Image (cartoon, rainbow, N blue to C red; front, side, top):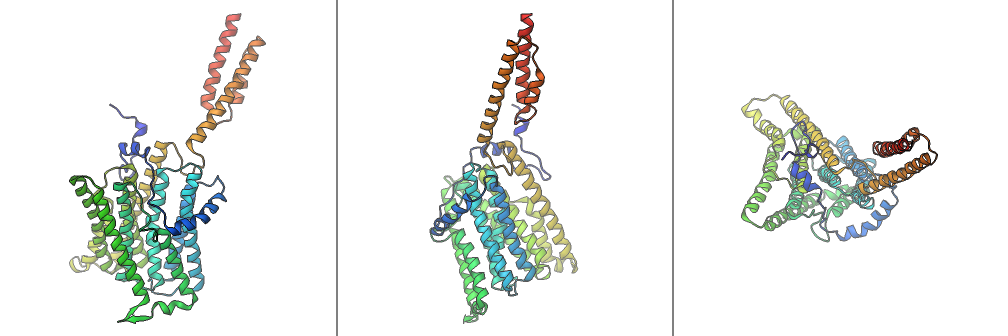
Length: 453
C-alpha cells in the first residue's frame, strides 16, 4: 500500500532523522515529569506568578529560546574574561552571570507552564527544551569550574563529562521508562543545582575567593572538596539510573539492547578522553570547547528525538565519527603522523564545520517534520483546536450571510450578485473554502431563477 507523501518525513542534508512510524507515534506522545523537589514546589509560587503576568501572545518556544540565550551569554562572559578558566572574574562579570543564570532558570521553568496555560504542549517543545538544555547543562558545569579557577585540567574534564553523560542517561531513561527525571530525590534536582552555581558565584563576590582555595589537608582545598563531591554524587546517580533503566526492560533482548545503548554513550566519553589528553584545550580553548560541546549535544539531540518518537536508539551515533577520528588524530598525530603546530587548528575547524552543519540541518528538518505532521507552527500562541473552532465559527457566520443574500436575491427575482460574495470572502481564515461554498450557493440561486423564467 502506498504511503501518503505528506506523512513521509523530509530528507535533510544528511538523510531522514525521524521514521514514518516515528512521526505517527509522536501524535500519542505525552510528557511525564519525574516529580518535583521541595525547592521546585517553593519556586512554583514565583514561577506561576511570572507566567500569569506574561501575555498570551508570547509563544512558549520563544521563552525556551530566550532562556538559552541567557545561558549562552553567561558562558560567553566567562570565556571572554577567563578563556583558560584560571582567572578570577571581576564583580560586574560575576553579577551579570548570576543574573543571566537566574533568568535562564526562570524562563526554563516558565516555558512549560506557558505551554500548558495556552494548551500548546507538544513534542516540539520537548525537542527545543531538552535539546537546548544539553548545551546549557555543560555551560553551567563549566561556570562552576571557572568560578573555582580550575583551568582546563582533569577535574574540569571529568565534571563536564559527568554532566554530559547524565543528560544522555536522562533521555535514555525516558525512552525505556517513559518518564523524564529532573531530580535525584525530593531534596536535590535541577533547580537546586542551578541555585548552587549562583550561590557559588555570589560567594566569590564578597571577598570569599581566597576561602575557596584555603588548604584543608594534604594540599586539598575547599574548591577541590566541592568539585570532588559533585563528581562522586554524579557518578553514583548515573550508575543508579542505568541500573534502574535496565531493570525496567522485561526480556533479555531488550536488556541487551539497553546495555548496548549505554555503551554507545560511554564510548563517546572514551573518545573525549583522547580529545582532552591531546592538550588541544591549552592551545585553542574556545575552539576546543565548541567542538567538545557540539559533539556531545548531537548525541543528546538524537536521543531526545528517539525518546518521544520511539524510534530505535542507535548503539553508535555515526554523526560524531568526525569527532572520534579527529580525537585520534589530535592524540596520536604528533607521534605517528608528524603533525605540525597548525594541524590542530585544521582538525578543529573541520569538526566544527561538520558539527554546525549537522546540528542546523537536524534541527531545521526535525522541527519542520513535527510542525507539518501535527499541524502546528514554531511560534504559535493558539492551540489547533481553538484555531479550528474560530475558523468553523467564521465559516458558519459567512454561510448564514451568504444564505441571506441568496434569499434576498430570490425574493427580489433578480440576478444573483456574486460580487457581494467575493467582497465578503476577500478577507478571512478560509478564503478558498468560503469562496467554494459561495460559488455553490450562487449556482443554486441562478438555477432556481432560470427555472422560474
